[in-house]
Length: 76
Image (cartoon, rainbow, N blue to C red):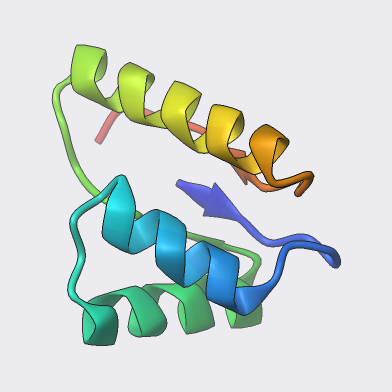
């Protein structure tokens, strides 16, 4: 899950969705807009271990780019 915040740019969220979650540009924009409007959105569905790794990758990439973007995981 990706969580909306007031600082992370929409472009960066699209970049994260494309680079970490391998979404097409159209899919990434659609997910980003959902997160922007609803406050939270599903980036992808994975096994627990893969989801855990992707959450860590999102946090690391966000920190490197000085954004507070948060990701989390939950069971389906």
